[in-house]
Image (tube, rainbow, N blue to C red; front, top):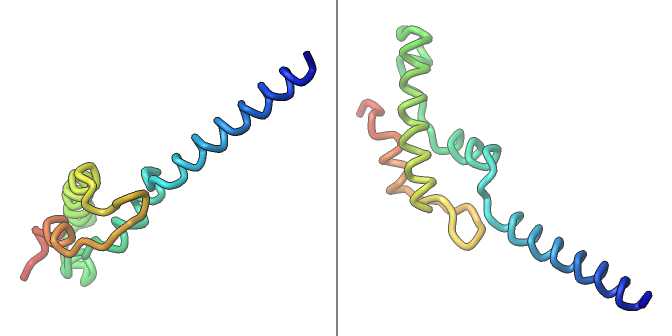
Length: 99
């Protein structure tokens, strides 16, 4: 009877660790998304110079973040549980950036 109890505990730990390993391998946390977004995002030059209002700069960033989240949802920035570089997606995220 005791062996069955220990086996059930062991099996529970195996399942927990297997699920945790899969959860860790996929970078789906908000922190990971924001780290990648901050690496990809190019702030508007007028925001850096101070010639745009704070609200305009915030809206510019929010629109870029929305585009980034669409790309992230389409798996453009991660594959097989790892973050990848994607220049095409970067251009779409920063599509409003002045040329």
